[in-house]
Image (cartoon, rainbow, N blue to C red):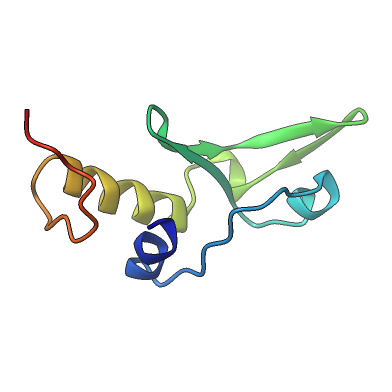
Amino acid sequence: ERQRGGARCGLKVEERSVSVGEARGADELCCSGAAAVIAPIGGINYEGQDHQFSGGEVGLRTRALYEALTAIQHGDASDEFGWVIEV
């Protein structure tokens, strides 16, 4: 389902481990999860070196994913994935 959710925002989604070296080369990083929704990663420190992403701000892709997911959660967008259950 994550692949379809990412495709909705024009992104290819992969669920896999990412090395620190690969992460350091990224323009933008975020994490996702049930409780975290979409959480931007502003920077990391590795071996005493700081690496900043998206200028320390929420990146465009991260913001788009967050807005798409929360729109589904709040009922402002259709839930084509079956993620929302009424209680």
